[in-house]
Image (cartoon, rainbow over all chains, first blue to last red; front, side, top):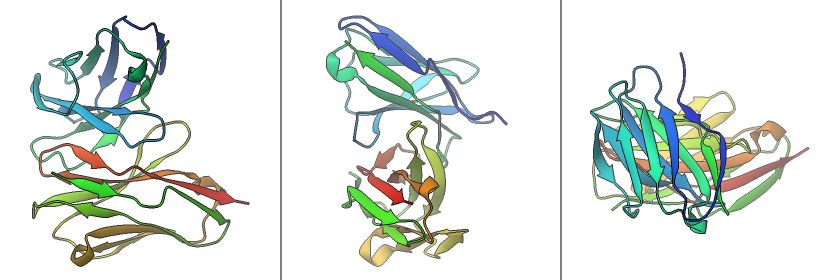
Length: 113
Length: 113
């Protein structure tokens, strides 16, 4: 049973560039959530996708956008990168409607220089 | 709004000692779920346990045990006979039904040989 997989594992981008991160949910899960974890802090919720629509959103600017595909996989896009966007980006998958189980991928470490 | 507090930023113990990680949560909802995750240096969040708000029975899994007390809004995690491999950052998290996880700031546990 494949768990949550994310790609790439590491990424270095220049300030002002755009980046796309990818996530495949655990088999049988239909909901994908994205979290940002800055160094030394707990993960912060970015947004959640279900049925190819954004269902919930945390306190993140519009530079952060996403997409969910019919196979439930998801992308996180960040435009106009800032140095402060450097973080570990974690994807979690769960099963609607209760979403009571959340399993995480290994994360993508984004460094903005 | 939900809030999770992990007051212990760092804990250091010697191998074979018992250690308890504290977690205090805040929510106005009567139905919610509490989680513990382990984050080793590799970065992946490893799911340890989920409890729902209607089940206050304590749980034991090998060397791990969890004490859930609604009266004090606490969900503490004890590792018995700690081992070096237990060294990691541990996160407590709260989820109100169908909504995202709210994480604490984490506790860095170091187990010394």
